[in-house]
Image (cartoon, rainbow, N blue to C red; front, side, top):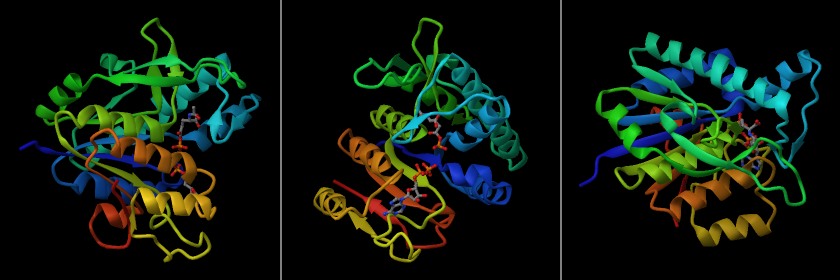
Length: 259
Ligand SMILES: Nc1ncnc2c1ncn2[C@@H]1O[C@H](COP(=O)(O)OP(=O)(O)O)[C@@H](O)[C@H]1O
Ligand SMILES: CC(=O)N[C@@H](CCC(=O)OP(=O)(O)O)C(=O)O
């Protein structure tokens, strides 16, 4: 029998709100068993870029990452957001260790090839160092990942945090019975985006295709669910989407995805 592992991705709107972040980190600290946290911080990167007079360009939610932008995301994701989360978890008695994909060669990627669009320094993940993560977990450290990978030739690469979370879950699924949680500000996948309680509780492949063709899934939810099914197709046991009460088991109202 494999041990259980939870890989949790925290959404951008939760990171931005100090109170919501504190509530989330309290729930994450209390979560039993082995766990890994993944965060982005896209909106904060856009805000810093604006303050520095650098324009942000996103296509379908993916950031065009030129040389200046890779510096900004390193400062914001790898620095500010990652270290704040680690410090706050230490205060909640969780021995967290902050990592980018370059640290311990934990997430290896290659620069996305230019097709119609040149995304610049954006990485598509080749694989994760599951042995390193297993060792860290075995000495009671909780890895906290930002949305940065590396190419092995000295280049840091920007990688969407939802993708980092699903790739970590896939890589770890060979060692652990892995559940992937996407924790954001909504209660789950909603049938009606204006109705917070219209949660679709169970989604399988057939339901997923129905929701897609009915146009119920839009914006950030499109790549998120793509990542979810990619994880399920690659040995991840279960994927759940919901707000913080999903994590501290205070509600049954969240979305569970299975193939
Ligand atoms: N059917 C849906 N149910 C829930 N959220 C949806 C749906 N369709 C689109 N969304 C949007 O997807 C967003 C979550 O994706 P994203 O903006 O990438 O956030 P995150 O930072 O949490 O990854 C929600 O804030 C919501 O506005
Ligand atoms: C390539 C790419 O688009 N990377 C994302 C990484 C951050 C992220 O995913 O943040 P959220 O989860 O808060 O949206 C970006 O720079 O916006």
